Amino acid sequence: MRWLPRSLYARLATLLFAVLLLAQLAALAIQLADRAQVFYRAVGVPLAQQVAGTLTRLESLPPARRGEALARFGGMRLRLALQDAPSIDSRNQAGWRGALLTRLLRRELGETRPLRVTLADAPELTPGPAGPPGGHLAMRRPRLHRHMADMGLPPDDGVWVRVEAALDDGRWLAVERHLPREFFLSPSRLLVSLAILLAAVLAVSLFAVRWLIRPLDRLAHAAETLGRDLDQPPLAERGPEEMRRAAHAFNTMQKRLQRLVNDRARLLAAISHDLKTPLTRMRLRAALLDDSELRGRLEADIDEMARLVETTLDHARDATGDEPVAPLDVDALVGSLQGDYEDTGRQVAVSGHAARPYPGRARALRRALANLIDNALAYAGDVTVEIVDDTPALELRVCDRGPGLPEEALERMLEPFQRGEGSRSRETGGSGLGLAIARDIARAHGGELTLANRAGGGLVARLRLPR
View 1: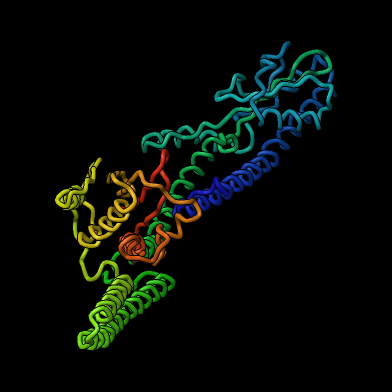
View 2: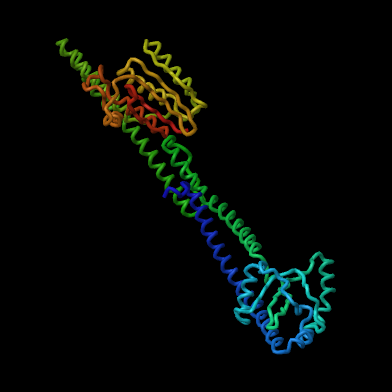
């Protein structure tokens, strides 16, 4: 899936963010539903029943006695009045709470009765002469308010719900009911609190993910550099149990590779010694022959065998030997090769330059470039070495204008003992190991060697070395 991030850290972070966001949205939906239920039961139903009861009692009286009866109702938290016309704008219905109260009131009063609802911070009606139960508490509230204000905690004055309903005589009943403000808190506050919680949990989760993935980053870096330096220090076996096991397995693999390389070096040294001994005996015996023509042929065959053995062993050895990695001036290396070829009468052009030193093995890279240049000079009269240094890698290109190669042979020519020239003579085609050795050196540096035909004829060998 292309839309997924590439790194493990980014994928885990995206997954955590998505899960936390869904969880917070679900929690928000649940809390809003709970608050709507609380508002419905604690505010909506009692207020609707109270307004409906008042309207029923008033309409049961003659219009002349309704004002007198209404004067006995109300108090500090409930205020009622009769008025000739509604004072609430029909467009101001107090949002979803006003719509909910309207539905509840219509359930009690019927769908045909004109009705308007709004919310206000202060009442408009004057309190009735009779106080509600708990009037003594209402008398004490101003002193309590003063104490809270002295402590820097101003009291919550609450919210006034104003309902206006039409009576059967054309007049309107205005009802104002005082309710605590917590019933009317805006969902934006809940959204802000959930957003803060989401940000805090996400920040802690991202820190934890980065902390847990850091050993995996070290393991990946060690695996990338293992091909360049087999003798690098072992990984620290610490962290979670799984990472300790992975680091231990990596260190065990590195030790086995080191033993394999050392055993191969000892085996090649033994083979080289054992093969030189019979070749030396053959050369001595050939020198004892009286037939000079036969002696010359045998000595030529022996020399050819010695060269083949030495070349084969040279390819089988580690391409970089025991040379340590060190900062390398690439421009100076290519320039010295150019001077050596010019001393022998062969022209090699150079273009481009390296932006900074490359951490590599100087003798091995010089050998790889020399093999590529020798191969190009064998099939073309002019050779150009291009130095291209960008951020991810350093690329050395050996370009010629020779006959090129068929497309199907480009990859095969990098294998050992493959030659572009058909005969098996060393004078005309070499041993067929130069490109293979150059590729081994490139891979020992974590890079790669590729061949490609050039537009207009010729071949380009690209030695790409990652930084």
